[in-house]
Length: 204
Image (cartoon, rainbow, N blue to C red; front, side, top):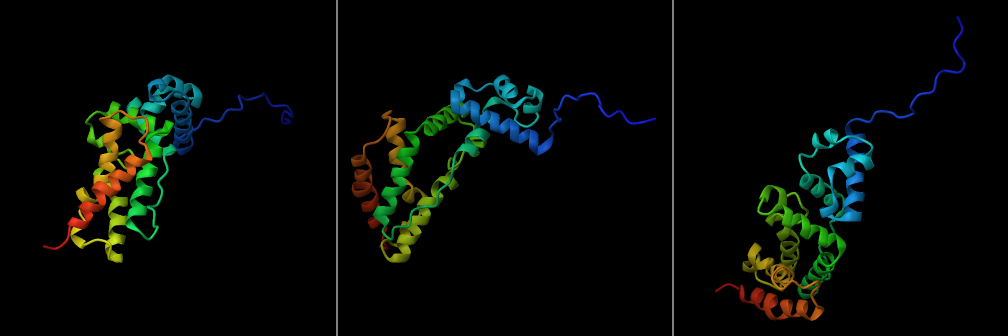
């Protein structure tokens, strides 16, 4: 018996599993959330785009919010804290970065996810820089460098002190509802509040 030189055609589609399938789902979620925002993200749309079924998604992400957060994490990038050699310039640069981010489409997506998460701290902690430790880290880094240079006293190295500038900027967005903060507001935060506070945190 000879082998058939023309075997019947196959579907040409290999069933995906594990990391390959997870990557396909996450890439589809990133595309959907980029195009339609969190409000337009649905499990049905992601399943269709990824070429899978909703059960495959739910086995990995229990709900739409968890999938949205995972997609945002893929989109967001983490930059190293600035190191200009001067505390004032470092603080201003960090504030300007945050201002640009919160004013961008990616920042708008972050606002949607935070609103959807409500007070669920375990979900908020999954968002880049939203846990208290992660949010404070770059500010403690630049303040620690300033202390090493002699620009501030060691007593200033406290998370609430270090992050007061970013808290005031967040207030502009959350309380005042501004689409973006003017640069002179950032300068005021640094020169009128942040630096005077740092300089007062000296040994008695």
